[in-house]
Length: 257
Ligand code: PEP
Image: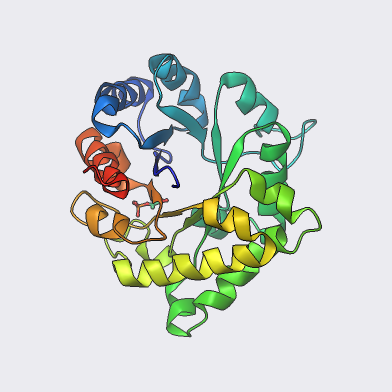
């Protein structure tokens, strides 16, 4: 049984006080979400304050990105080791906003993923197609390309050993458009089948999250799908009640919600 995981991506929103208040609200609700793993990803500069609030709780923290290099003269960057020192557990890599707005290629994303794993943290690798690519019927081709750096690597088994994948159709991020549960399930099944080609046992255990306008009202249908192991949540993660409702909905995967 794959443990459901719900991750909140707070992006570049909020200030320290609101970040701490949001973390506190999530912490207070963790008793309603037993069996579901929860993580929140505040902006870098709020990680320390959020970690303090979450200290002693089961709610994990994640970072939204990381430097592709181990360390050195990289002005403005944050290394994986620095995140580990803080107490972060997860790091999002390859978010579509990083790819589209900051020019991150598949090669950059893979380098980041390796940095994260090298220090013992878990990368959440985001993949997903644009609307144009979906309309051209290229969804599987795009996803295969985004995954090939991991799946075709000589050390694919090691890369897959501690990894979370997130399918985030770009056209559904922050747009209010959501993939239907059936559309999302079809892609999740495709992803799992690709991973099975590199490691069948690992594919069965791998968590594949769905991200793209998940809200309390559509989460139950999405989480009812056999290959959707939780969610990567943007907008709704900024509202404590909505995020918590989504975490509670993920309990359905355990037969509990
Ligand atoms: C995201 O940015 O990862 C995301 C899924 O955002 P939203 O839930 O707002 O679509």
